[in-house]
Length: 326
Image (tube, rainbow, N blue to C red; front, side):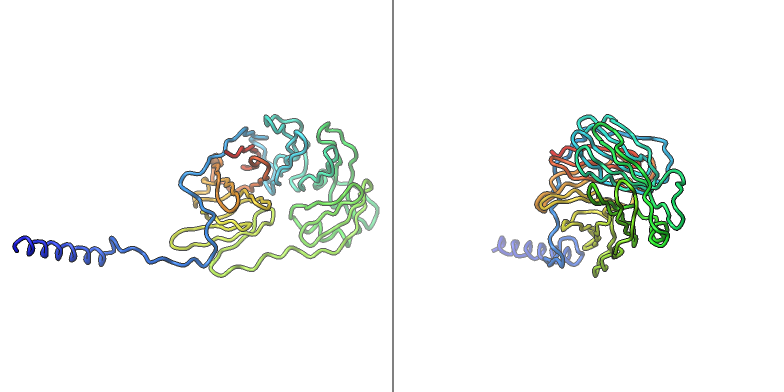
């Protein structure tokens, strides 16, 4: 009987302590919460870490305006890089050794690859070029063989003054597409069809890019290459969403994707030095690689290209890394 009364008293004490702890908030479990957005691309505590096959710096100390970097392009055994401070360069894909360099204005487009031995480079002209009255030069082009670095042709792209006006007002990077006979160059509301090799250009219809509408409860933006992304903060956790993928972070700095894979450069925190390359397959994070911490907070554009087995990333104005996925 005494033992029974003692057990009752102990149970009462434990019950009272439990109630007090719940009131104090120490052991109250949160109720399950329904997510208003799709589930996160799971980022487990231990995902694979990509290996940098090589990292090169193409020009410490270069001071050209840091306007843009473009995603690098693989052509044969060359990696073609285009960035405001670098100009145009080709690296050996296996070692990162510089195969060749070509100077260019900071106002340059990504190289247009027509064939392994046929690449078109477009950038602002380095020097004034005279054209007929009533016409204006908007850019210059060079047509090269990137494997043998033989210039096939080069010249100025010029249009009627009225057609060139919108192009000359804009400072946006050039976007280039086309074929061996005609290329189309665009920037903001300007679009010109250019016949090669004469360089004669005429305006074509173009709708300026329209930013996607902001999403409720999200802070949205676009990468330097125009890929839209959004940030959400829920339950004290910040995530970013791009190309159908959501991962932890404050902002998306660059992204590339195909039907099943993506690589995203994510700003992890407000220090501006903790930026990660994140590899995603089938909606799940499978590897990461942290960009080397910069000497100063990172504020320069970043570009990335997705390739079989990894990625190439251009960062800190002049640095290029070849990443091998684990």
